[in-house]
View 1 (spheres, rainbow, N blue to C red):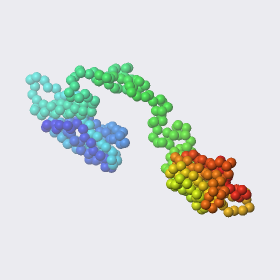
View 2 (tube, rainbow, N blue to C red):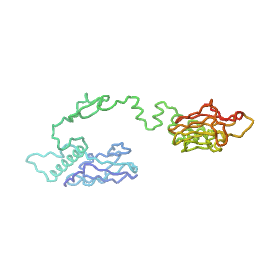
View 3 (cartoon, rainbow, N blue to C red):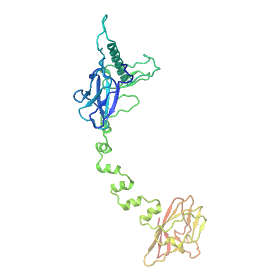
View 4 (tube, rainbow, N blue to C red):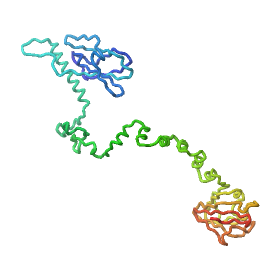
Length: 356
């Protein structure tokens, strides 16, 4: 019979039974077949008679079995790949001499075996590294160096495309990896790598935290501290720290304020963030005097100039309702852009006094 093309290899998948499994190419001998199972990319070669046997081996008049089948000794687990490989020997089935009679089937058998051997060579050569078809033989040297030269070397190609070997520590355009780092890179999990690098279990817990909150909790920070650092803005932060920010003036569009601000800005200790739209004079703070008794210092505040202009605190300027303002040695106090000043209210002096 004529041997079909491209039939030197076949495969099946285990289904948890012993067989039957059909071989996709004819055989002249049971020894011409190699059977492998592949599990997790690891091949295992099976033994004829021990691991599998042929079923109904009935050769034709040329000695060939057209549709061979095998049965495994033990069931092949589901999902395991089974590979069938044709490995005919490179010898003739019979000797052909002059002046001797031969049946046509003997010639056909020899031709079939030769065709199978050719298919096997094509199967293996198709897996080999090869140059493009348009490169002529001898254009480059693809011959491997002898064992003594290529031992413990890496294969590669030089600038002209010739096959050469490189030392493990001198591969071009690469950085050598030490034995220490090779061992680290071979580890299969982050935890194993960090442990090998000497990181404590505590540190591994920190860097494995799935969120900021989990990281801070693992670091031992209190819920209060986490709330503080998660403040979205300065005012929220100060409020959570217990600093009373009674109001925030987003802008001061006028050049003069007299009196300075509404009284309710001074109902508690506060940070006053002022943003003038131009150079601005602040007058008449006396009308916002806190009304407490029995203590010397009853109020404090911070004026912060959050703009590119200046804020001038006018000292002892007449105001709409009162003349007292801030004690500064009789001089005005200028708050430059981006600066601040701290003041307290003296109940005894009935005046706002600059302290910083």
